[in-house]
Length: 549
Image (cartoon, rainbow, N blue to C red; front, side):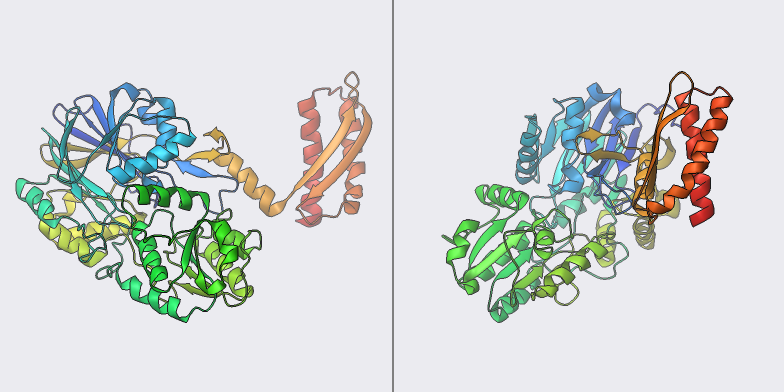
């Protein structure tokens, strides 16, 4: 990605009394949110999430923030604040705690419950400090106050961080639903109070900065769900994020009203809804939720399934149903509701699933044809409102791709924040808050770290390039046996082409070229395996290129 300040070197030493802010993820992409705050030699981390791979990253499971710049300072970390329980904010915590397992985690009740369930799979028991809105905690030299914000998962928090260098407010992901289902509003009174005290630097969610107006209230979806339930005469299958408790609450309420039973499908859905129910975030009318095994005994018009896979993820329940690879078989007349957004980059995968479901006769209701989703992020109208309330002295847009960050900075400027006080940084760009002014101070390493199966960080850009070439162009493999003393050919060559569209028979034409090259090298006394490989590679490469371009 091009950088507006490519000449940045490593940052100089942090001036005494200054606060350093280093985003390691989430700026320049939607995902892997992680920001490091440094004051007085101590580090406070806010969020530690993952990014999901795109099609040009074959075989990659997750992408982590790059911990290189903090790896030799793990003992200086006083805590990790988790603003809410979404994967793009908590998913990399297990990988950080692998490096040092006693770093304290700070978050709200639901957020900590979700991360603890995830850490159990990694066999890590974290040190955790539960906080809630309105509370203030001293974490090392950082005086942190937590503020309620509304988002597409309950219990989300913004955090105000006070140090002698000034007050920084991090919004986390937020929007301003004025009629939230749980009555827990984004606390504009608290933000106004912080604004009165003086916010020196505001780090604000940019995801929807390009979208005009205000996000419709979540409760608007209830009517659409009830209408869809009323029309459905067979099974209803709803796909949603496994953490969108309020969306799933509305599905439960609609099912209850229409006398249907609900089963959760998919490991993460079953686990998260179990946690939400246990902690009282999900209110389940008696006998409404049943085990999936019970469904076979119920008539179709009494059934609702709630599953994962609304982003077209290949292993999730919905994709497998669309591909006929799941115990739930879609039949003519089933209604499928995709109650979720289209995350940029996932559109093709989602439409593939919609097409698959439609092919088996399902009636698919999605964001494109019905109001079954509202965003979890403040749109431009809300952000303007927010800046007028907070009146920050400096603004740093976070959580977004370049276009979102820039749009967010422009909104800040419209409300009167001077242009030179709106800092657009990206992953690894260090921003120092000194004497009330936020300025870019340098750059640290912040590349993509790929998780592939059990390996972390072993996959590099060049190995991904190899995978892409293998996937798109194929491979020609040549096996030969040579005498180690003379370098002469004693067996082979056997040649196979895979994924390249070249027939094995056609490859016979290249064998004389290989033999010719080898006999020439043998007479030159070449024995080294490496050199022999090069000779073969050149001979085959030239032939493939000349014959097939």
